[in-house]
Image 1 (cartoon, rainbow, N blue to C red):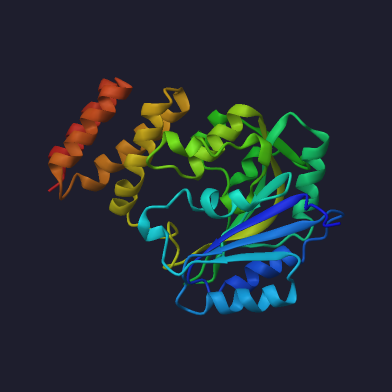
Image 2: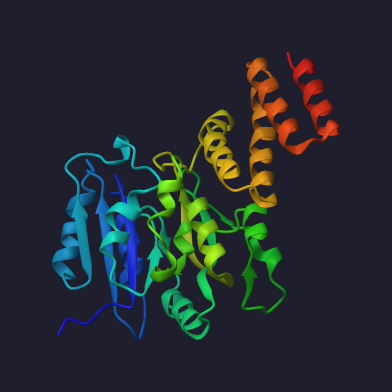
Length: 305
């Protein structure tokens, strides 16, 4: 009889040859009293990432289940929906954990801690933990800034939608959620579906929790899809994402994050693209209705040379 894994670990990777071993080792060193499966989607890597995955698969054929693309799917418009299409659809576990191929887990008890909590708290749909940020170019390591959420010695705190949108408190490599809480139909509501949307909907169907322990590392490097963006690139990427989320979901949290992105865009475009900057200032005012903010934005646009 083939036993069903309790956790499906989902990993997307593309040209992560320098990093994928560390990622896979983080999965394989997990100490659990349950079975896991590792579902990897390699998006037609050209740097040998696929060879490394195949080597690991040969060593762990009962745990690692790769899917290799011949053509890059990201470039075909699957961005934000790739895990749903290529990994979640194959998952057999009661829970899904996620980590991209350039990030990695550092706590061998990460999954056990998260699953123990979820098993004893059925009202929760999703949980997270803290992580560190590694700047690949300099080797600098930073804390995630979530320490302020916890009192001394506190194991964890509940995560609300408002808290989540006020400050992106974690990264996807920390997430574990109930597969039954997730719906593949969510993505069909959006053109720009991302992690933000997924976590929002998970927090709507159940409670969320973040542990105070640090369980992984998020790499920031030039090859990362979203690791390094210039201020203008950030605006171009997140304006349509945050704008669509606000238009679909009229809540205080989605309004705030969209206004913050608009405000960021007013600043970064005010010097060289004044008409764009003015447009974003007008949109921000139309949503927020704050004359004081609008006045400051106009002064900034006029003042910048």
